[in-house]
Length: 78
Image (cartoon, rainbow, N blue to C red):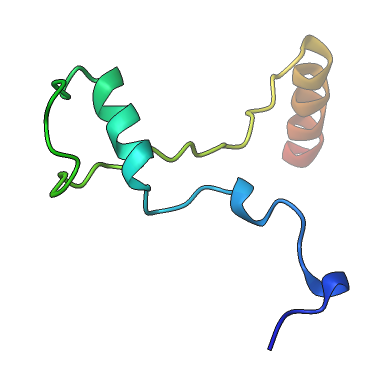
């Protein structure tokens, strides 16, 4: 059976994959200067897929924010 057209997701293969195709591995090896011309494309070594992790941005404390924090601490101490 085939999947209904309305149920297919757009950009399904646009996300990061854990397995590279042969062409992608050869391209990556060329970029790393590990590929020599004339080498057999069969039996290629496994290559690590670099994943980018987007972390949360740290909040910058402003002078106003510091003053507010100081007032709150002083109020708690009383």
